[in-house]
Length: 252
Length: 177
Image (tube, rainbow over all chains, first blue to last red; front, top):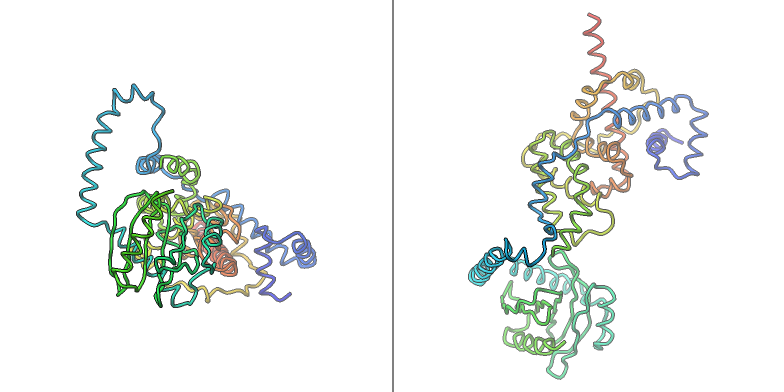
């Protein structure tokens, strides 16, 4: 054993990071080397000193209170009727007003989150194209693609082939959007690739078309799923495709 | 939605002390530690759906990232002058009087010596000795290889032993005068 290795082993031994065999081996070494044994005892003493005497800062009570307020939890169970008579009715009215205001503001201001997610979807599309890794499962058979995706996700995306309409299913892959795994269906139209990102959503049926870096992105929601379509296909044809997919996905 | 909040309160908030202790040791004052932990916990709540496995190391990794971002902005000097490659891996086994002095430390001395360690060393020492985390968990939290954890920890202990030795030697000298 050279001294570098010994030194590392010494710490690992004291920290209980060696498996039984290596630990026994090291103990045999320590038994034959009083200096190393003394060093290991000093390390243990230091460890015990820190654990026993150094300050441990528990979170101030006020911090916990503040956090529980910022991350609100379910209120205590109050009988609903009493709650309705008491605080619930004004609360609901207020929430309704707030919701309507928010919806108007959201429509008015064009929420930043949509644009950010659209940009993420675009990045995913471009990365897959550049890497030549368009699909994890290559198949034009919806009965192959759908179970493959369902097995790997917490939801089951709607998968259909639209060859009849000129959009041929080519395969599917997994991607990551806005911090969550999503299904991506890959379609082809002539030489164009169309990525359809799907994840469960709030069902807001806001249709939203943007052009980023020359790519067109169609966003819509149907039947509890949010869709983002990304392609270099022209806007009209991509819009047609969005309509076709939305119609098919409307029925469960 | 409220399910998620309940789960968060149940799984993550019990580790608030560990989060605060780490932040307090890295930022070295109460007020900043509170700000950093508050921001980190709210961030944790936003990314709660991404939690796989144990909540404590997961929360600690978010907290330590917030701490180091905070240090970079507010205490850039604390981040400077630190070099993993300068870690000396060949100390003599006879650590000598400075380590022996550990036996004579007192609480204040020990706290000062830990607080004086470079932030990256302080971090691994706190995670190892106060949170009792394994090398593997620390490596994941600090996002460095296990070898780096080992060398930082060894370096931290050595600096600590030297510091405590120096402080107690100085104390001895002044008392002997």
